[in-house]
Length: 438
Image (cartoon, rainbow, N blue to C red; front, side):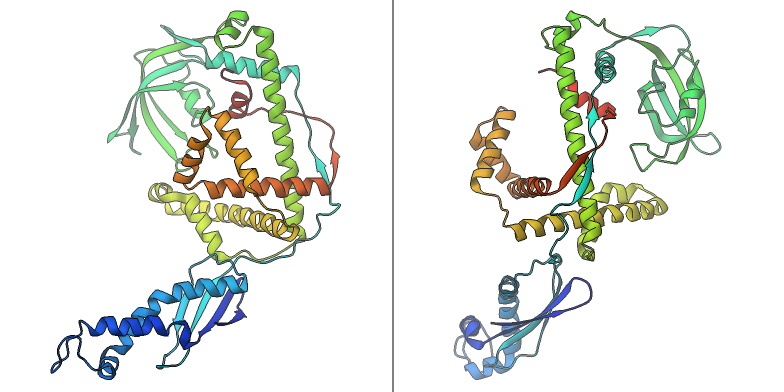
């Protein structure tokens, strides 16, 4: 096989592949013979059609069928010989073929950029170090109390922090109820983190059991359901119950209910969790700083097909079906910027791994599988079967390789720690750090 590679704009390559007759003649002759056994030509019995006549009448179709079968393997062989990694489906063009001559085809395809990453040896970066304070611990313990609070119905106007058990009927612009747009027995936390907008809470403050109010509000920009963000909505809210939250007493019994020895043990474990979180945030920040510097020092163009696949996968069918065209265009642009940065990071890590000879061994995989088995109280073979069944084994190997590259990079950069910063604990992060039982 002869392969000529032509570089096209961006990361596209055109491979011209020439295969001598001996590389496919056997398959071609077998196809002729197989077709001959069923071919029906006037004046000849099945299987007795002269080969010359068969080739003249049906040769082109037979050859096309054979080439369609063998070209994918020939294309893959050409990629391997040139050490090219495709990131898109190829556009294959078959040149005119004459009996006894080589098979020639071209394949245009986008490939993963091959870059020589520089600038990481001795790179100077600043690492943010987070300090866990007593206030952080108390804040997290307060969240645990809120999580385990009791709620009781009260016959009084609602206050911030109360919960409303209510029916909500959506209204159109003229405040007429929309058919089929009613939600019953919704639980609303006044002033809670999941509130759609400040004005929503303001309009419901002071509402009493069995009272109905009409509220109009605009969803906040960072509302978790992006399809609703910045959209205006009107609701008729009928309150069935007002419930106040009763926090558990902060004592040893509360700690024991959470499966800790006592209150001191709870505080110690919460601090350990927050310190683990602070170390994780510091490491992620360091990685981001290193990668941003490497991306700036090693400019290259990302294949458009990789970006398109990333964007479509992120948007998802559900989002595309339920979001306005204007918002969809906005999200697509935002996600596209994220896609470019994410793909650049991936390519840089892969390039460093190849240049430095870093790879994942079977021992690395076995060690990680054992860790997963122990953490999830599963057998090793059960974990292996699960990874294989769900096609997650390759993802696991990619993750392990990323970790190796990051370990390699962090050992080679020069790190300066910034003055300790206050640990900012998000609701989800704090709950993961100290919430739950041991």
